[in-house]
Image (cartoon, rainbow, N blue to C red; front, top):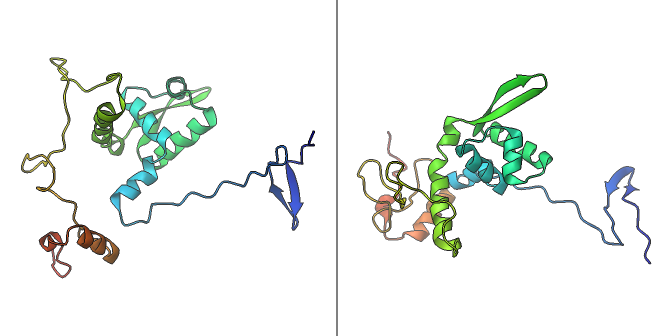
Length: 203
């Protein structure tokens, strides 16, 4: 039988975790890339909610959960991970703490205006998940509150009331687009130069 190797060793005067188990070396996890400085609203949104536990916490927050033990019971998540995810959502401005007990200190986690703006994203994910990944049928769906009739959400333009579908609507570079963004969408829509912003125009 192999002997277990030590859990840490000293290399160049510093302790380096090796996590050996039966001779197998587990390398330290690589640091996650931050999307916060990418010139893309999708990437910056993922920086705040891209970890899957975060989206499920927001799902439960919209269902009315506010307390740590309620989130943990619903999700079956480890306490340490839940603490980190709640802290990250507070730091991102999606949730805010409200003290409900001083002895012992306990906080509730409530949706902010920014967090409530995430509701259409969750509803769209819900409908998408039911459409593609629920062969047994919907366990949860969107219904008319007055009639109970199932609803089918679509994305619409607030100004015209038209559904946002191709080819009527496209994603185009905005006023703050970088050259890389301009090139990306020039390649995507080479015949739609009119959708490009006027870089020399003044507001």
